Image (cartoon, rainbow, N blue to C red; front, side):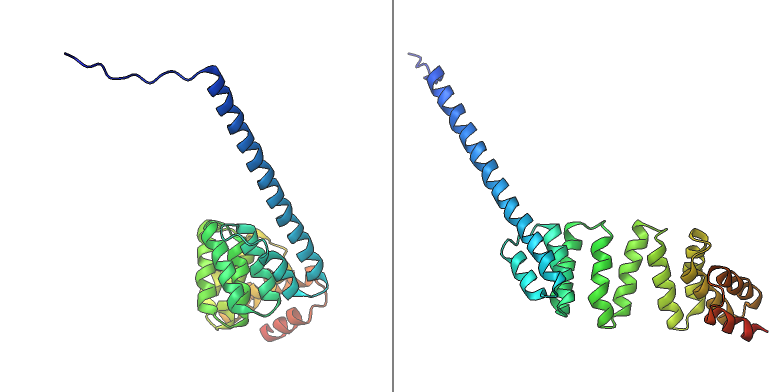
Length: 219
């Protein structure tokens, strides 16, 4: 004799309505909890800005640590900055690295990471970070200038040249770019190009002592 499997009874309208009400209540409760948590984070940020203005960096850090979430890009970025301001360089590096890990293509956490590393003179690490940024944004004038400056300070003028030329190509009347490129060209013994660049610097800043000094060396 064939035994028929028991079929589940359909839920009554009362049960369905109860489940819907419970689900709606839980959603409302979760929404209210998230809103309250977000309000606390917003308030912690507000207080941290106020404390930062008075240079009370440790207290500003404590405000954010009270609402810290490891997966929050904004909290890690801000904590990186505050720890840097408090001269806690290792902690600043740690939080900036967390921000980089959370947003691998973002440029701002990498620029932040450069701050504590520069104080420690870790220029090779900084160059590596700048190369990462230029892979994402090859036309970034700030980073191109800084890479050129690092190589210039190392007296590696040939390596500095293309980065500085890119800056001047992007911003042909930028004072800093023109001046550094002029000195770099002079260091490469490209006097004619250097002279033109120094003259452009004087158009931007008439009487500029560095440009006048460079022109004297050419003459």
